[in-house]
Image (tube, rainbow, N blue to C red; front, side):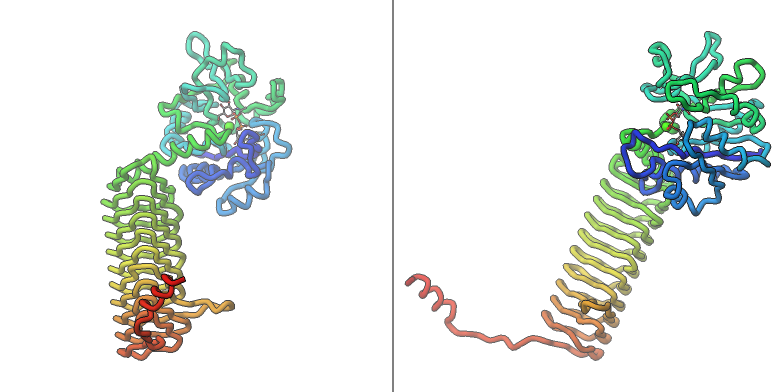
Amino acid sequence: MSLAVIILAAGKGVRMNSELPKVLHPILKKSMLNYVLDAAQEIKPERIALVLGHDYQHVKEAVSDYPVRIVLQEPQLGTGHAVLCCEDALRDFSGDVLILSGDVPAVGVPTLREFTNSHLKNNSDVSFISALVDDPGGYGRVLRNIEGEVLSIVEDKDATLEEKKTKEVNAGIYCVKSSFLWENLGGLDRENSQAEYYLPGIINFCVSGKYRLLAFMLENPKEVAGVNSREQLSEAEKTIRDGINCRHMENGVTIVDTATTYISDSVTIGKDTTVYPNTYICGKTRIGQGCRIGPSVYVEDSLIGDNVEIKFSSYLTGCEVENDVVMGPFCHLRPEAKIKDGAKIGNFVEIKKSQIGVGSKVPHLSYVGDADIGEGVNIGAGTITCNYDGASKHKTVVEDNAFIGSDTMLVAPVRVGKKAVTAAGSTITKDVSPGALAIERSGQKEITGWAERKRTKKRKS
Ligand code: UD1
Ligand code: CA
């Protein structure tokens, strides 16, 4: 099948009430337009023409990774006009054209495949997706005669009260022979309440019997819900989120509460991992098997191995965690944190651009930045790598099996040798030799009877 795709994305999206062009509004950290572009790419068309207009530069930058022919529609005179603007981009193409809307983000690839196949099988000139919905407000209504044949599509703004009752709506997705398009688009007029060239007007050219028309009715109308408002954006988010969660559950992931689990479509999760409620997993994150994530955990752009436990209220971005690691509650792993096998990161611990070696522990209240921590190291509570001198960052190295006493300040650049120990409360400014104890404290004084004297003085005054 020779197929080209046109994506309509030139409109402003007035009803979003936003500075951001409508099609760039994100759902689970990916813009609506990106969903549509990804779906379009998956069906492997010969080419994709993307119609842009409103805030053209901004949208163009956002899609710069996609191999699309950008068509500028200026001014935006309606969806029919938008398709007409693609004539040059598709001049040497003679197959079928699948037309998608940038604001219908939840449509699935299987549905698009089924739709285009039906279009072909039926040898249609024009096919469109329709859906039966409970609340058809805002959509174009599909009008049929008593024999059930499609007569036309009437826009919400042009419909009579009687027509508005129709619950079959136009989803804004079409498959059309390109010869039909270029012969007929010029015949559309603007005689409607919005003075626009309506793309659904092409249906009217079919009723003469000259062309074959197919209305492809969908069972799951949620998939083709259009987004014109923030409320509809939220509904589309739910549809997409449910779809992603379902996919993971089919793959053997337990999701305890799908209503509060937010996983971006770029994420992969291994079998027998459990995701607890109120958890966000996004970006290019990969999670292994048998992990326990959450509740209330945020993971972005991170690689997590197998059998990792990330406990309550932990926040991870751009980090790498190997297998059998236990983290949190309340830990913060920042970019380039690398946690090796079997390490433990406890509560109120922040780690940035540092490696924590195999089996090492940072159990409580520590900041580890720009550090290389070896294997079997214990970092005592309250330890801080003082990595920043106000001008530049410096490195801390703690070699294998060293023991860092509680409340140690490691003033970088500094190195603590193998099996060395730092005494609690020490400010370490010089390298510590392997096996040595470094202690940096003023001697403890005692003033005999001081407490009793103070109490007596207080009573007298
Ligand atoms: C459109 C359909 C309606 C259908 C609904 C499905 C028309 C006239 N109406 O209505 O029958 O039920 O979608 O969601 O087509 N666009 C352009 N250039 C323009 C105008 C719009 O590229 O000049 C783009 C928009 O950016 C958007 C898409 O076309 O991505 C649809 O436009 P929109 O204004 O949202 O149409 P609806 O009123 O939702
Ligand atoms: Ca719309």
